[in-house]
Length: 96
Figure 1 (tube, helix red, strand yellow):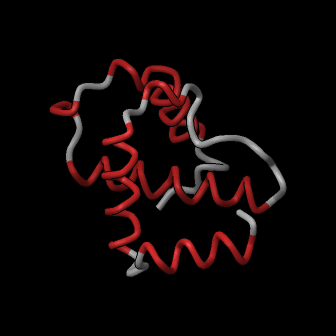
Figure 2: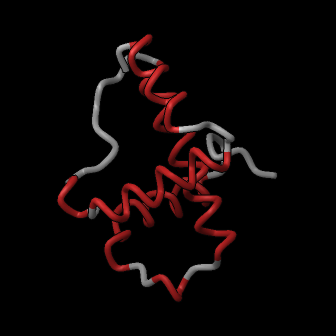
C-alpha cells in the first residue's frame, strides 16, 4: 500500500476530490470508495483536532442537511458501538 505522504499521485487524487467534491455523483463512486473516503475524513479530522487545530467539519455547513448529518452520525456511532448516551457523557466530561 502506498504512503500518501510520499506518493504524489495519491496526494494529487485527494486534492482533486477535495476541490471537485460538489461535482461527484453518488452513482459514480462505489460503496467501498465512500467508506474509504469517510474513514479517511474522520481520521484526518480527528488528527488535526487532536493536534490543536480548531475548525468545523465542513467548509460550508449549509451544504449538509440535518438529515444527512444525523444519518452519518448515527451510522458512525453504530459502527463503533457507541450509544447516544455515551456520546453525551463523553461530551460533558471532555467539553468537546
